[in-house]
Image 1 (cartoon, rainbow, N blue to C red):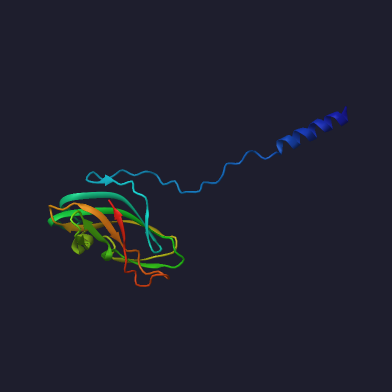
Image 2 (cartoon, rainbow, N blue to C red; image 1 turned 90 degrees about the vertical axis):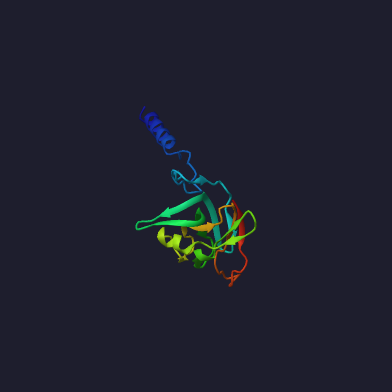
Amino acid sequence: MKLRLLAVVVLALAAGCEAAPSTPAPTTYELPPRQVRPDETALKLPPAKNGDTEFTLIGLAAGLPSITGSHTEFPAKGQFVRLRLVVTNSGTSSVLFDTGRQLLVDDQGGTHPPEEQAMVIKRQPRQFDLGHGVRIEFDLYWDIPKDRKPASLRAFGGPSITDMKNVTGTDVKL
């Protein structure tokens, strides 16, 4: 009887020690959704790369007559266009990222650099060191003629080991 009881206990322990089916570890970060700003359209575009920098465009607002900061309201000469984007460094070195190089291409093929005063008023970065694996989200502002529409972003990721001058940008259609 004792031997039978011991066999039952050993079998029960062995059955209990079997590994439970494991759940695989997630392969992506699950970021919580955020509300789109009232004057903005959410964009669902695939990421685009320029050198070691990946660009994900997530929001667009066009036709803005002015912008407001903590100390002033600033009218557009034409219309402000605001683009919300995420940049990620996928390279092994850091990249000096320059927001002033990012060009908005309009529907007539014209290119526009960011509006410096708007960027200052909205306290957006001018240049920053984008370290390995770093992901940063921010806005870019342009002032374009009222009769134009934003068509694409000509994105410049910054110098990399394979392209020290970073002369050629990547066009990301809006």
